[in-house]
Amino acid sequence: MAAQSGSSVFDCIVIGAGIQGSFTAYHLSKHMRRTLLLEQFLLPHSRGSSHGQTRITRKAYPQDFYTKMMADCYPLWAELEKESSTTLYRQTGLLLLGPEENPEFCSTWRSLVQNQVPCQYLTAQEIQKRFPGVCLQPGEAAFIDHTAGVLYADKALRAVQDLFCRFGGTIHDGEKVIDIKPGSVVIVTTTSGVYQAKSLVITAGPWTNKLMASLGLQLPLQTLKIKVCYWKEKVPGSYGVPQNFPCFLGFHLNRAQHHIYGLPSNEYPGLIKVCYHHGKEVDPDERDREAKTPGLQEIPILSDFISNYLPGLEAEPAVIEHCMYTNTPDENFILDRHPSFQNIIVGAGFSGHGFKLSPVVGKILCQLSMGQTPDCDMQPFRIRRFQNQFKSAL
Ligand SMILES: Cc1cc2nc3c(=O)[nH]c(=O)nc-3n(C[C@H](O)[C@H](O)[C@H](O)COP(=O)(O)OP(=O)(O)OC[C@H]3O[C@@H](n4cnc5c(N)ncnc54)[C@H](O)[C@@H]3O)c2cc1C
Ligand SMILES: O=C(O)[C@@H]1CCCCN1
Image (cartoon, rainbow, N blue to C red; front, side, top):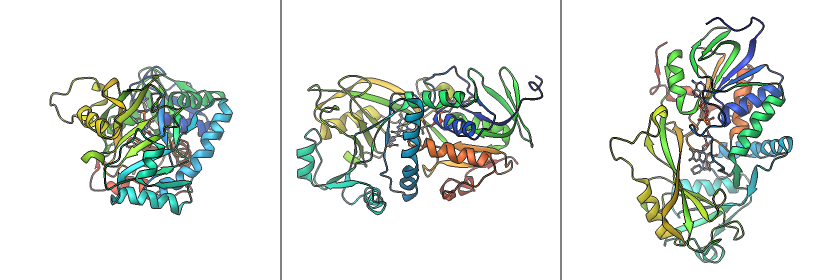
């Protein structure tokens, strides 16, 4: 296929219209960069990581650098709400629950205090009084991040894409990228065209390594299928908005190997979202194929947790949906230039916690693609930290 019209060398092509690619494209178009956003599926779709009604937002992180990045995210989310005339955030607070001595639990509390985030440590008595539907076990404690809440994910994704188009950007959905040729002008071939750009941003979520194959690099990414479970209240309204029930995040409670988290009733009346922060490894193109081996049993883990910690919910899920995580070994993001091609930028490995940070992730990827140095500490996000774990054919 021949490259499309000579005049159409874009400043940037972004591959993948999930929340990270869409926010990158939004920032690029705000900077007057001629930008093409390519998406393999027709929009909106539910095959990646950015679909669904809700995500948690919070400043509570054990790593200080995320808490600091979140301070920049809140104004950007507010700006998006204003630009799109849409409510995208509801403040509910986040209840963090964990064994008193758990190092991650303790460092999250320290980070909140050090960064002067409005927060509050609760005694067992206070928890029982304020959240009678939550039962902690002896030796466990709780604190609240008051800044936290719910982001309306589907609405946010749509708002970012609409604004990108309003600022002059172009989206081609239903167009899968099948080849990338690096160079000072990058050539991108899709199932229906060939395009050129001065820079390329790859934000392909669980498909990142499939695309990186043509660029001689395989990153240490693991794609997990996550079960998104909704549980029915025994007494309607007991874990709902009128009761001021917050989002919650449990650190290895009930001997669980991974976190368990939840959001108050929103998408389905009377159903609370409670999920396990882990899943089975999958090929993103075969997400719904039944696994050959039984592997992780997340529903019994969640049912047992609910019986012990949230006894006001029925212990069988009423609705199960699916989503994917793309995890790095340290669960920090990859935001970097390709080691061999300076005008190819990768944003990947959001490890199940990237939605809230997407306004700043998009800003960083936009700056990298414009040849600028982002003003935040980029060390935690470098590809080189996996020097011994990535495969390069270059
Ligand atoms: C169940 C669940 C709960 C979560 N909870 C939270 C939370 O509470 N708070 C939070 O902050 N984060 C949360 N996250 C994480 C957050 O949703 C993700 O980090 C984020 O959505 C990742 O976005 P992305 O753009 O990288 O990936 P994606 O949304 O997967 O986007 C990648 C896009 O690239 C497209 N693509 C891939 N290959 C090609 C190709 N060859 N050609 C064209 N297009 C291509 C895909 O179709 C896809 O649309 C959660 C995630 C899940 C799954
Ligand atoms: O990013 C978050 O806030 C949540 C925490 C629990 C797991 C899913 N993601």
